[in-house]
Every structure is written in C-alpha cells, then in structure tokens.
Image (cartoon, rainbow, N blue to C red; front, side, top):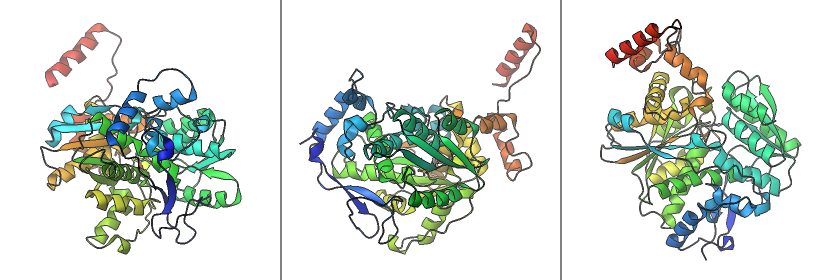
Length: 457
Ligand code: F0G
C-alpha cells in the first residue's frame, strides 16, 4: 500500500557474501568477509503513479510539526524508499530540494545541447552530504548515541557537525591537517564539533576512526554507514521528478570515497525496478588523475567479472581536496552500479579541473573544484563518442563555489599553478581568468576599466 511505511521493509545485506544480520557492527563491515552492507528492500511499494503524486503533494506542506518538516525535506519526502526512522528522531534542515539548472555556455562548449547541473551545493551546509547526513544522524539519535564521528576531507564534517548540533548530539571530526579548505573547517568549528586535525591524510584519518569506534561507543557517520547511502539516493529521485520522470541518457558524478556514486546508482536501479522510470541512465564516475585508484581498478579489470576486481590503494594528491582519497571505502558498490547502468569511468588532470570549474562559474552557477571534474570528464566522454550531442546529460555538482575560495582566487589571479607541474598547460585558461583590478577611487579610472572590458569582449 503506497504511503504506508509499513509497506516496505528493509534488510541489511552484505554486498559481497550476502549475509543478512539484524544489525551491523560499529565499523559497518561484514564480520564474515569484511565488505560493506547495504539496505535491501524486502517488500517493494508497488504503485509508481501513486508514489509520484504522494511525493509531489508533500512538497507544498506548511507548518512546523515534525511530520510537516519531514514533508518539507527533499529527503524525507521520499521516505517510502528509506529505512524507517520514527518522526520524533528525525533531524532535518529541509535538505535536498536543490535546483536543476540548464548550463547554457557549457552546453555550447561541449556540444551537448541538453546539459544540466543538479546543484547539490545548494543544500543547507552547501554540499550533497546533507542528504545522507539527515538519515544517518537521525539513526544515531534513534539509537540513543551521545557521540557521532567522521573522518573527512571537509564536507562530511561540516554536515555532520550541523546535524549533530540540531539533534543535540556531540560530534568528533577527524580531518587531515592542512589539507582541507578554510570554508569547510570554519563550518565544523561554528557548529560546535570537537575538531581534530591529524598529521596524516584522509585515509590515515579513516584508519584511526575505525580503531576508535571499536573502543568507544561512538556512532560512525562516514559513508560506510548504509543510512548515509539511503539518504543520498534521494538526489536522484528528486532529479527524476524534476525531469518529469523522463530519464536522462547520462548522469556524471565525481568519485572520491565512492559513496555518492554508489547511492545515485542504487537509486537509479531501484527506480527502474519500481517502474518509476522506464529506462536506466548511464552513471559515469570521474576521478582526479592524482586520486584515481578506482579508475585504475576499472581499467585493470576490463571486461572481466566483478569478482576478479581488486583495488590497489594509492597515496592521493589533487588540489580538489574533497576527493583527495587513495583508498575509497565504497569501491565495490560503485563498481556494481557502474556495471548495472553501463556507465564509464574517467580521470581528469588538475588543469582540466581548474578550467572546467571556471567554465561552470562563467555560466553563473559555480561549484567547488571536486564538482568540476564532472564537466572535465564529460569533455572526455564526448571526445571518445560515449556521450552523443543529442543526448541529455546531468552533471552532479556536489559542493558550493564558496567552499573553497582560495582555489578560485588563485585561479583568477593566475597563480594556481605557480611553480607547480601544469603551469604551462594552465596558460590556456587565461581567457577565463578575471583578476580583480585595483584602481584609484576616481570616476575616470572606473570608466576606463569599463571601456577596456567592452573593447575586449
Ligand atoms: N564532491 C565533494 C564536494 C565532496 O566533498 C566529496 C567527498 C565528493 C565529491 C566525493 O564523493 O566520497 O561519495 O565519492 N567528500 C568526503 C568528505 C570524502 O569527507 O567530505 P564520494
């Protein structure tokens, strides 16, 4: 029966050996084989038309009651496809509800007319993390945890700190010292997290956190937590609703720890099974060249069976700090959805990322560097003929432009690659650079600048 949460039941299931325990251990890894769990539906809601109208109807709800605030959330509005959590435990900032934009100039530049951006940076803490944090933080509260914790490249920690504060939970953040942007760090401080900058990288922070949760009753909020993945699924449901349930040909996402690609892919497969959509979009995953363990894994695997895949961890390095990850936790889930949807994996260089970020900015949209790998990747997928000009393409922009202003300012001043590899290649982005002009406070000087800009346009 649609609308009745009891119509759907969820079962934890190991993605590798298929074990179905009643609950997961603190590290969310299968005790039999060490792989991750996912939530599997064991009874599917069966009336797609009724689900669509129920979800749409909830959008117009007003008021402050817990049931109403769930309806106003772009995540909980779709709760028939989420593991159930009692309304009184739900922590929501009315996340989701993010816009879908047509990227006009980028469309021209890539030769794909119908090019859209689903801007997940328009969430309450300015990244896609909020859609999964609302579900996982609510799970922590419903299980009476006092502390929640995560290792992060900055966005997960910002989001976790906010949701913990809203839900009266304490939060512990482990971040790599000196390798996250100030914007993200400032968020977790302001939202009141206990913020520890460890002298290691993201992968080192994950290692320590896994040891910590074995010793202390702390609830892990990284994307190994399957509640995170379930919440993040809703970005794809909302996208399809915005497209009036007409599936695009391609959805392109950045790949870091690979939770988001897994979530979006799982959502697409489920929507297809539920007949909410009649065909599956291809989900492609883009990594930075310096943080490309998944790209290498997929290329190495070739056409062989998924069972033969191994992921070799690397020491990661990229200016797109959000995806500076060498040992992604959800690689196996991501591989499954890549195969299920028929998508591809690509890698892009630092200059390609910087250029694509400026192009998205010039379209009046903007995003943080990690999000821009999607446009850079699209250019490659076009060049290889995988994406065709008449197809509909959606880029998932994962974080807001203001998350990493240093990157943007250095780009426009022309010093982003000063003394670094890529300096020569970077010169080709000159026309996209808009350095600020310092002038005397005098009208003639300003008119001179205006006239010069007009002549050059
Ligand atoms: N884009 C942004 C802006 C991110 O912050 C992240 C991950 C990704 C893309 C990659 O998503 O890990 O699910 O493949 N940020 C994490 C963090 C790791 O700690 O904030 P993924």
